[in-house]
Image (tube, rainbow, N blue to C red; front, side):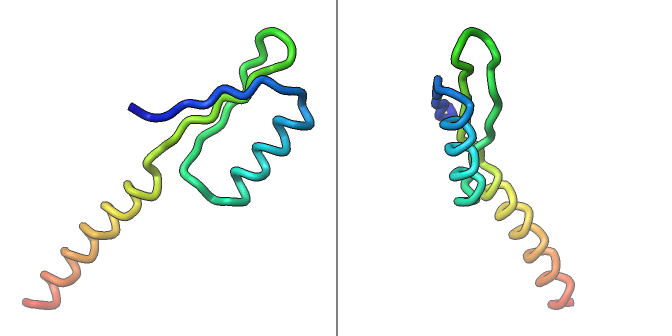
Length: 69
C-alpha cells in the first residue's frame, strides 16, 4: 500500500509544498482536489526510482550477457 498525505491549505501553502517536493526529486505524485475550500493537495508515494533501477538492472544484465559471448 502506498502512503497518501492529504494537505488542506490555501494556494500559497500548497504551491510551496509542491515546489519543495519537486525540488527534492522524491518519488511522490501530486494532484489537487478542488472540492471545498481550501483545496486539498493529495501527495502519493510512488516507486518510480525503484522501477527505473529494475529496468536499468535488466539492461545491465542483458549487456553483460552479450559481452560474455
